[in-house]
Length: 134
Image (cartoon, rainbow, N blue to C red):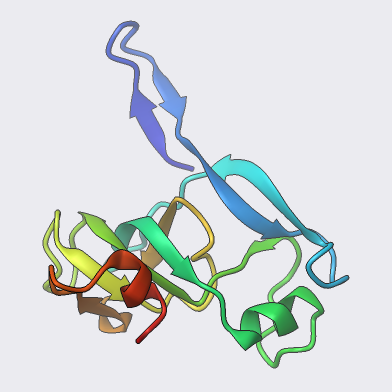
């Protein structure tokens, strides 16, 4: 869980985010938008503030438990994202615009991704296009 320091009180608080969470393998009906703790990047991972996320066929299959990668419930969907680096790693500095393939976790406000699955996103490419891998 991510902690933030409240400037007024000096107390540590959990940082929450919104995410599309698969709660049951019943297709899209099993997906609920929930407030969950932000991910903490593991050593070497890039933390990205997500501005756009693409929906692809494996996302739909995962809502039914029909894809070969079947995470335990509950989990956050999302294979393709674009956003801005918040925590640097693997040559991706803070503030850079990027596209990434987290495979799991992209349908959230923040996602942690292996640096070899993160790619620079030129200013001329919108976040929406970057998340759609166009």
